[in-house]
Amino acid sequence: MSSPAGNKEIHIDPSWNNQLSNEFKQPYFAGIRDFLKKEKSAGKTIFPPGPEIFNAYNLTPFEKVKIVIIGQDPYHGQGQAHGLCFSVQRGVAVPPSLGNIYKEMRTDLGFDIPKHGFLESWAKQGVFMLNAILTVEKDQPASHKHIGWQFFTDATIMALNEHRDHLVFMLWGAFAQQKAALLDTKRHLVLTAAHPSPFSADKGFFGCKHFSKANEWLKQHGEQQIDWKIPD
Image (cartoon, rainbow, N blue to C red; front, side, top):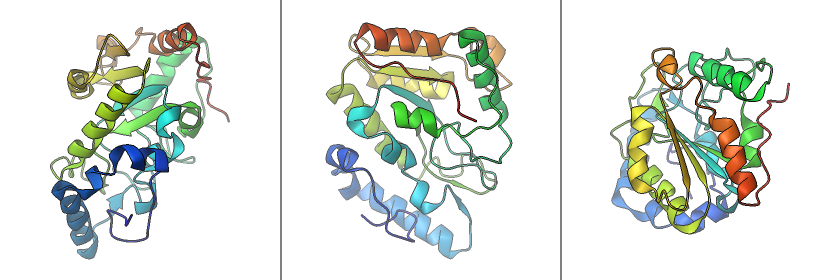
């Protein structure tokens, strides 16, 4: 499959391709590809880089997903976004929302605050960190919110809801909580809280204990729990 960003060939994990192959054939997806090609041709910088747009899918195959965290769109600063919501590359300052996630982890689980914001270790254990919008223009937050990505990521959420059992969905903030309408709450654990942004974290994110609640659910259903501690 060619890159939506129109540069190199990139690939999505075969397990996800099996679930979403029809989406790549839809007119909206051709529209995404055409839009991104035009933006790049016009000299605009798009994050994350093309090969990392589907990082969440490639690091967490469909059958390995245990927990789903839904973000809105990628970080728009240089060197930040790499295809996992809330995560940033090593060497980049930890963004405020992620800093508040770490504070809640410390309260919930007793961990020290990590020194960096690179969350790949979560993804490799089954934490699927999905931005509802998969690309953004540099320094222009929410700039790609209307190009069609929501159709693709809603299809992703619906595939997980329908074809997997006993998942945990963490919906932080009003935007993510809209996705609850796509979920069967009898089969999956849906955890909601305020967004971890500094503007709202004290309105219900702090104290939510989602990390321990998720592990307890996994334990109840015979699944390996997540080691939330971030390696140095």
